[in-house]
Image (cartoon, rainbow, N blue to C red):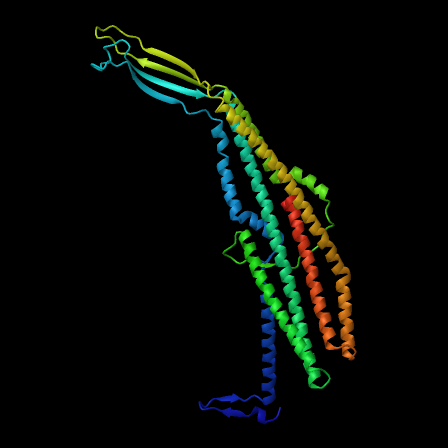
Length: 456
């Protein structure tokens, strides 16, 4: 180290300090710079390892269905109605309330004296109406069948909600995939614009090539805006189904592996639906409730009974003679003398209601078969299309694009053909994901129509 580097400089305070050499200062600055960079990188790494609970959550299909089942307002309202229906059977099975009455009998109107006449009494009376045996049990049976039917209606609504959630989720999945594909192609076309502009500037390209690439790039931006608008609309529908209309839902989880199962057997699904579809179970309970009401109407010819007991308190005679109290008992029955215009008409009414419930059940079976067969046909068509795009069309389009690029670099193919090949690949990739998501949406309808939303 030379002498000048160690010269002591005297300050204004009279104290002395060492002046560092220039190369030492430079080395110190470089060390501080690298240390700051390392600290910044370390801080970024620490921020990247956030806990899982703090990471951005992605919305999976099962989570969306589960949230909708728990928070859908329509389902909550139907559950509340079912809770109210649970109290009806016990009411229908109970006897009418007894009647307690207090009577003053045979009072003389000249004096209103209680001991003047021997028949004067103060009476306490209790009466109870008793329907003909079997009527209460039939009323209870009809109420129980209606309650059970409502429970199956809740299960059917769960199937419907799960299916609709799955369809909206898969639509969002497709839109997210399509937006990602469009953004990738935007970057590619931006590079193509730069390439075409560079070739034009050096005299090896044409100005129409630049303009064509810019037009196609603008079209991709328009397509991206359209897809984003559709995604927001679909997201709002899904939020409504999930009971989150006032909140935004998380992004769709695109990391899930999409695997299309083989096309289902329609006859097997129809057989399964007849045994498990909640809608058909509800219709069966409605038929059974109508049968119970018909039997109840037929018992309308049978009389109901009114039982009663009374106790009359009498005053002793004015001469002091004791008068015993009176006890009274009664049995009364109603006489169906208007059966032609009342009981018979009621039986006819309940018979027609039973026929209606049976026809509704058959209609539900036919509707179920149509839903399954129609969704299965859509699934089979999209299943085949997705396989064709995946295994043949897209690989061929990629090979064509690679060949076009190689030929364009040596001047054997014009710029327009390269752009067309790239846009064709974009179209085929979007169509592939469209067919895949359409197949999954059809599969959700099939599973809901066959009666097991848990498989969605």
